[in-house]
Image (cartoon, rainbow, N blue to C red; front, side):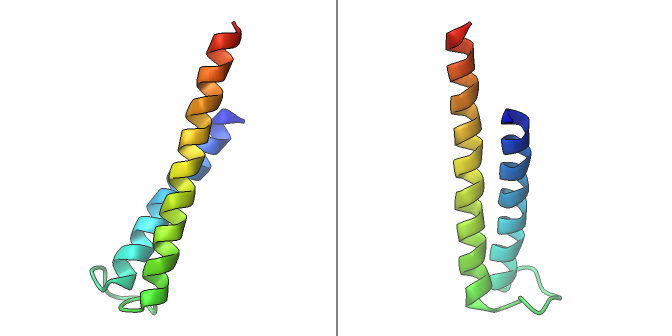
Length: 67
């Protein structure tokens, strides 16, 4: 479960970063380029990804304490 949370969190952060950069017109070449709503979606995806990675770290710390 922990590994799946890491992978999902990292993917969300990667996708969120791309969406944000396209939304603020740094990465051109997409229908998302220059649209503020994609910048907002990107930030939300980044936050969700960071939360997943932090949760996975907490699970790992909790599992180590149990042993």
